[in-house]
Amino acid sequence: MSKTLEQSDLREGYKSVKLGPREIPIPGEWEAVPFDEAIELNPRYDKPENGPFDYLPMDAVDEEKQTIEYWTQREKDDCTTTWFKNGDTVYAKITPCTENGKIALIEGLDTEVGSGSTEFLVFHPREGVTDERFVYYLSNLPEFRAVTISLMEGSTGRQRVPSDVFKGGLRIPLPPLPEQRRIADILSTVDEQIHQTDQIIEETERLRFGLMSEFFHTGYYEHSLTERPTFGQTPSDWKIVELADVADVEMGSSPKSKYYNEDGDGLPFYQANNEFGYRNPTHDRWCSKPNKTADEGDTLVTIRGTYVGQVNVASERCCIGRGLAAVSAQEVDQEYLYHHLAHRERYVKSIASGSTFDSINSSELETLSVLVPPREEQEKIASCLRKMQQKYLKEQECKQQYKELKRGLMQDLLTGKVRVNTD
Picture 1 (cartoon, one colour):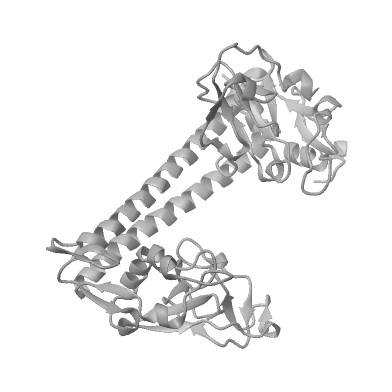
Picture 2 (tube, helix red, strand yellow):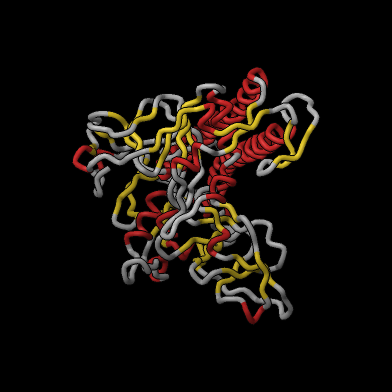
C-alpha cells in the first residue's frame, strides 16, 4: 500500500487516517485519536507500603508466545519506576526486544500492583474508552510496531522508543468500545487455540523423552535388567557393541569455499548443527564439488562446538562439512540408531574435549558403545518414537496455521477492513 491513499482508492464508508507516516483506511464511524487520549502511558499507581511485589524481568516475557513465563519478587525499595496492574500491556522499548515483539498482557498478578524492568513501557486502557485486550492486540498491529521501531533513538545496539512518540501526536484507529471487545474476543479465541496447541506440543515432547529413557533402560518388552557402565540399568539380553560394528561412520570435510553457492548447484551443504531442525536440517547453501557426503536417512552427528553430540536425519543426499559426521546403519535399524544416538547425546558431549572448543574425533565416535536389542524390538522402539515426532511436527504445523490466521485477523479486524457483529 502506498503511503498516501487517494480518495478514489477508499471503499465506500471508509476514510483515510495517518498511523505514523503511513495512511490506512478505517471505517467512517471509527475515530483516529491521539494515543494518550485512548491509552495512558506509564500510569502512576499508588503503591502499598509493604511488599514484596511481583517483579517482571525482561527475560520473563517469551517474545514468540508473548506470554509471561515467570515472576520474581522484590521489596518496594528494590523495585523500579515501572509499575503496572492486571489488564495493562507491557511493551519492550529497547532494541532488539522491540523489534522481536516482547509484548505481554499482564494477567495473574498476585499483588495489587507489580513492578518490572525499566525497559518496559506500560499501556493502561482508559476507562470507558478502550478495552484492555484491544490495547494489547493494537500494540501488536504491524503498522503500530513499525511506527515505534522507526522512531527509536540512541546509539546502535542501545536504541530505545522514546516516550515522546506516544505523547507527540501519534494517532491510533479506535472503534466503538463494543466493537473493540468483540474484536478482542475473536483474537483471544485464536490465542487460546495457539496456547492449547503449545501445551500439546510440550506434552508430546515430555512423553517422547520419557519413553526414550524408559525404552533404553528397561526395553520395549519386559526384561531382566543389569547395571552396565555408561548406560546404567539396561536389559541384560541386549548386546553392547561399538558404533563401527553396526554402522559406517563418515567424518565430514569442508570443501574449498569457491565450491559453495546459493544457486542450487550441486548437493545441499551442511557445515554444523546451526542448520539442524527438530528432526531434519535445512540449508541455504550448496556445494558443487563435495569432499564427503551423507545419504538420505543417515544420522548426522555434530562433532565440533558447543552442541557436540546433537543429531539430525539427512532428508536427502548432501555434502557434510568438518563439523558433522554421517552414520549409516548396516547391522541395525537406521531409525532405531538415530533415536539411540539422540539418547546418547549427553554422554557424547561428556567425552568431547578440546582446547578451543569441544570436539570428538573419528576414533571416539567409531568406538562409542551402543545398545543393540533384537531387531523386532529395535523396530518397535523406532516406530513408537517416530510417531511421537510425527505428532510433534503435525501440531507445530497446526500452530503455524493458527498464527497465520491470527496475523490475518489482526490486520483485518484492527483496521476495520472486516467488520464484526456486536449484537
